Image (tube, rainbow, N blue to C red):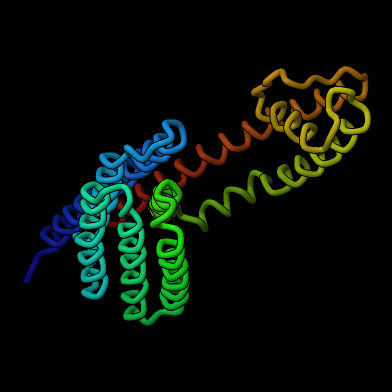
Amino acid sequence: MKTEDEILKETKKQKRRNAFLDISGSSFLLLSLIFSLTALMRIIKEGDIGAKIFYLIAFVSFALAKFFKFFKTKNKTEKARLLTLFIYLTLVGVAAFILPVEYLFISLIAFAVSIIINGIFRFFNRTGRDIVFGIIAIVFAALIIVVGILVGPTNPKLVATVLTLILMYLAFIEIFAVSFAQLRLKLLIKIMRKTYVGEILFALLTLTVASSLIFTYMEPSMSNLGDAFWYCFAVITTIGFGDFAAVTFTGRILTVILGLFGIILVAVITSIIVNFYNEISLTNTEKKKKE
């Protein structure tokens, strides 16, 4: 029988291990995103697909992120899914690196198959959320396969772009999901209600729309609503690009009001972040005292 101290030590050790795995997985996802973007820039700017080394690093990084997640999970089905994806994504990266440019569409189809495998494994979890996401993944991958077969042999540059964009999208979604998993949404909503951020954002949105309409009709430099919105964004965020300027008296008054709202918004967001971390710190202190 384990003592309370031993159980506490094991719990702390498990938390540290999970934190390490989360940070490592997120780091590799970020690396995958960066190298995917590098590959995409290479395709667009250089006009060729000499980005194979970037593909290899991007895919292997994404695969390693799954591998770190594999160590964290205890569900056997989830473990099998993550291990399969790790092997498959690594092979896709190697294939994209080795295969000639004309046969890059094979990597796209193989990548789509890995998404289908991911979708099929989700069905074994038997939750409504997993089933829905599984169906979406399978339909999405089927469309990719059709594109790969029809367009691939004739337009390798387009295939390379699609391949990169999908990988970037998946890496971004994974990073976003990991980030949101760390948030305590109930606590965040509570703080947002206290700081009246909803009311401030609504007022700011109303003011922006109204100001944009006025700027469109009154300011000679803003000929359309898009320019007016762009000007409002530059003022609210205090960036001030200088490509547009308010010259009428009414326009300048509205610019001052928008600028003041922008400052208030920055202060409110800062307040939310500070309060959020203070509340987490207080909650953790209370938990330690109870333990």
